Length: 333
Image 1 (cartoon, rainbow, N blue to C red):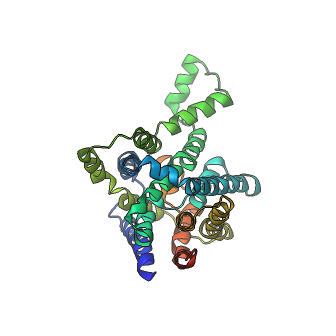
Image 2 (cartoon, rainbow, N blue to C red):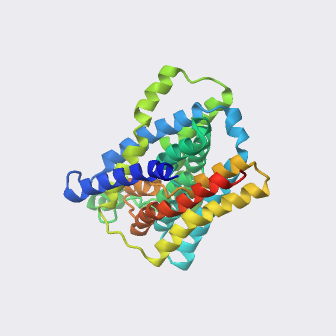
Image 3 (cartoon, rainbow, N blue to C red):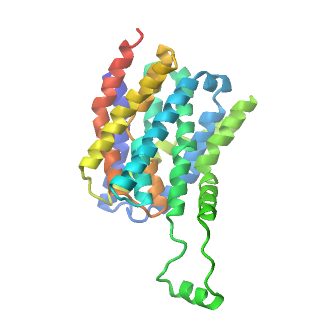
């Protein structure tokens, strides 16, 4: 069990610490990482997501419908509830609430899932990782991007050129709320990180075998997704101090404990097999993912509490993931 935990968490800690150190020492300018962020979000991650879904058999994906159901409900349930809690109870703005909700609701499938699932269940169950990645990319990620798009200012109110232009051509009519929502949704759904798993699942559904040359070529850039994502995460985290607030601690408990328990209850409710239940619980027990940091950096919306939640969740998972792994050895045995 210790070796599995080390494989899951040690590389995550190491690469994040590497990025953090590079940002703190100035080897990488931690206030100008847009280019690195673009490499991860527009190239590495889309390639990884496409290959993961396109090379999975559709029958294997469908056979794991209880995992698909449990991860969908847990991620979106936690996401919506945390967003509402931040907006109504804590009076946070939409972007801040969305980034916190993604940090709490979406586990780190991109970096931590592969070593854990391979070590515990074997490489033949990597289609489970593809399911988790697809759910995360198609449900909470587009919603977060749409909310960030809606909260993005249309122009700079202090810009003299913008003010002069508006005065010359006359004030433009303010778009309706529906127009803003449709536009934001369109921008979010057009992102490579959203489109890649969609096209990958279409390839899987069609039964077409992705050529080995194409798969190998995409993996060449996709294999860097987890490492580059964690490195950029560390660099961005070096901009702000870690603060363990009551809100952060509550978020970590929801992310690391409540999600795993909810996944277990859903699998029991649909009479899922012991193996499927174990897979779903382990996937839900993974620490918080780094997508929120990358999304926030793309829109110049960094959340100190969301960043602290991701750090605390990763640290706390040394205990919670160890308990989940120990439980998986005994459940259904």
